[in-house]
Length: 596
Ligand code: ARG
Image 1: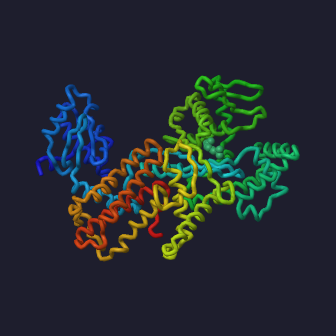
Image 2 (image 1 turned 30 degrees about the vertical axis):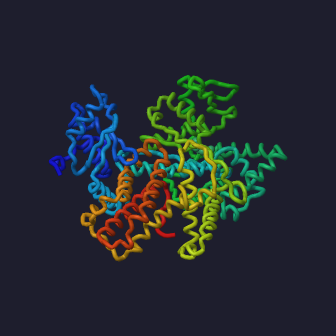
Image 3 (image 1 turned 90 degrees about the vertical axis):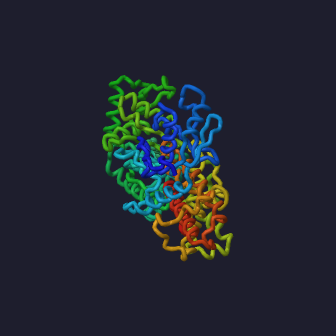
């Protein structure tokens, strides 16, 4: 060891070694370079310390600093003054790049100690590894799922639910105060239709049993009637007009339908491990907010008249002409969104609001964001549309999917059949129903989040149920395997306190090193997902970790290792890997299983 090992590392803004120990390794690298290449500062260099390609821990591209002279000369200076210390082991020069290896023993000890402390000793009872506090003091509303009552819950809503739940977790993990909001499609002429249909086809029992399904059935039937008899539509329109006018008699049933639908949805969201702080809906957007918005648009001269309808011309921004008020004066989707956003701002004073809605509604979202900007609301800059592509081919064996519970049931059934194929294993499962449900849901979620949001994808039950390849069941399996390791090695327990576990004994193991380096990178994965809003960043990480676990498993053995100190150190690596994989799965709204 040289003198450099004792000199303290500087603090840098934007870094937090108490939560991401790799920050320290990067700072140590940046410090060595900055000292060799004045007038560069540690801060300037730090931004250029990137993860290396395979076999290299960190890499720095010298030209990015735009120093006078040749990269080769700068590299030589760094190499000449380089001293290995407790953070950095060695440096190599290759063309315009410097590649650094960190000190393996330090890496193992520091990362594992941090994972352990932030998972098990937070004092909050919550695992905090991977979290950061970049959003401290800030409030965000995340609106997602938002299905329409009495219409089908399509796969688009499922995607919104899955991605939205992930984003809510992600923002919480980054220190934000998060309000999860479900904006139901609970208003509009279809409720007039249902009211008319309910008089003929409605049943209280059926409604109590499954409101979502019954209302859908009534809606389908009354629509058939309407095809044969145009008067049905007129009745429905009159009925909805009464609702809009606030006629309590006309609203009575609708209130019950809405409440029962929410109750049913809550049960299903619960199974998906998804929770909302606020259920609101189009019906709840105050008329006064919509009127105020229209008045303001009028005052600002932004509204023009087209045969009685009111519209805002957005063609200058290639956003077409947006109708904000229909001829008959009834409100519409767009106006409710405009009024609703203003109302939400007044109520919550959010720093940011995200709408998780399919890319099919890109124009709609862009229009109402633009209108709010034209109205000069400063907070309109803080609205964001997180969109996603289509899902093709999600149907069950009984036919097309109409309800969320069909998807959940099918996922559980498909998984259950798959698990029954391995009779011996199946017989050892304590709770086969519950387990197949959980793995099935994991399969659906992982398939959904594995690729970039904007991509369309074809849903495949065959792919989602497989335990091999990059699937949800594979991730659950990896977690279960890691969870079994304590049960299988009672002779090594309890583990000594972290400082007494001899991880240095693993310094020559590339498996341990790869695993620990990956674990160390998890806080960075969380940060970059926050920038991109891509769940695939986290899914990809989980797959990489699971692969690293698989390749270590048969080589870096615990059971059967005669040197008990070595066995304990390995056990600790695996337990930390379980914790990190568990954290990543929970971030994805997946409940990691301990057994299957
Ligand atoms: N209920 C709408 C639909 O199913 C989605 C609502 C999206 N959110 C919004 N604020 N417009 O199409």
